[in-house]
Amino acid sequence: MNVIRIFKTLALFLILAAVIYGGYLLLRGTDIVMPSLFQPAAGPRLLMSMDGFRFTRSTNGTVAWRMLAGKADLYGNKEAKLKDVEIVFDSPDGTRAAKLLGETGSMDTASGNASIHGGSKAVRIITSDGYLLTTNSLFWRSGERMVWTPEPFKLLGSEIYLEGVGFSANVDMRSLVVKNNVKAVLQE
Image (cartoon, rainbow, N blue to C red; front, side):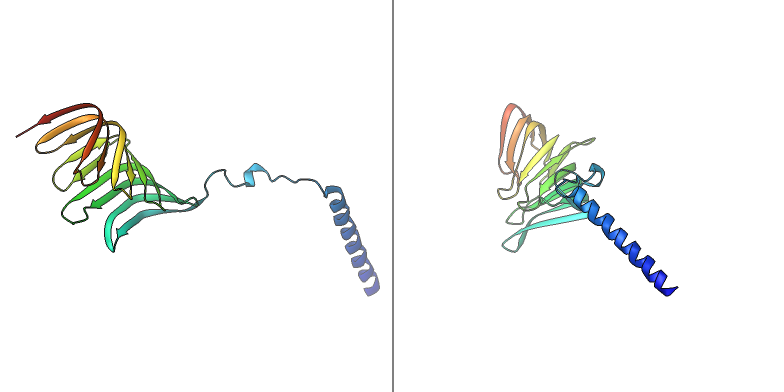
């Protein structure tokens, strides 16, 4: 009985090997395409999602700005997609600060450059000396500490109301260049 069992096992093994080899001969040189259901999505690869994202940029050991987001998706191409964004800018001398708030945004984590967008609320910049700037979207260039928008905006302070279309400014709001349709009201 043992010999018959060994013979059956050996025959089964030979048949299985013949089927595998026959399959190989039939399919060799044939491109096998993976169904799209099992292929990764096109575009940047999502590395991780997190709640409570924090990102800080320092210059010479001093924090130049910090970003907080309620939620972030980080991708392999160094991009972060953000929700409930807050960026706090401190002036180099530490005497002034500005806070940028927006509902959504994206940031290049290598350069620190970002774009922030509003939704039900406008994008806002609030400065420590009482200015409020509102618009639909803002772009941030980290290395130059510049914000800008091509869209309509409003700036309100204790001594001025300013509106226009498109501006660029340093985050400390020491200089502001308005592109078009400037309207200003000075108050005493």
